[in-house]
Image (tube, rainbow, N blue to C red):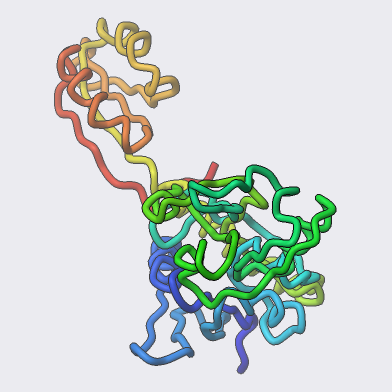
Length: 291
């Protein structure tokens, strides 16, 4: 019996974080170090790893029912696919990335129109050409195989490169002139597969679980006990505890409180709670949050 879904997974920098995300969402994916065909613990899913840059074409053509790629590559390939869900994660962080136009700090290029007659290196060729056309600029755009930031100013006048924080650009003495687009990982589906009710339901279920895993990634659960008389003080003084679950203990003068907070808040919040008289404070990890 063949699997219900043929799922495309991104090879390269997104491979490891994707496998981890699926594991947290409840799908175990295993593979050999040189294998492009993963083993799923879900008999309804099969597929393989391919480069994110090519994924949208394979999904559009029906080789895959669905897959994970960047919103940028859907646009670059002008792929006619269904974008099912935004999944904000990458190799190094859970944030949206940007394709930016960058030049050396000493460059006289300050805006798009200054690129007239110049040469730009990028992996995102079609999007860059469309950007220049919108600004009425005639410039040469050449494809870059990588390490794009080292090509200016000796080989090209400017680059269009992907960045999350801008630290790599600054390290190479580059200045951002403009942002061409923001991008993040997206779950996409072949339109014929999306029209199949059984496949659509499976894809939507997977999207729900993946988003639930991402939602939980930046949060932790918190439990504590405190005197009932202190409840109003804690709710007033600690904004993170807006809607906690409050229950009575066997000693009616004490209550148990449970809530979910941002992970980065806990380092300040827990000492504050302790100073307010909270006891038995327990922080615990979360696997999934379904809003």
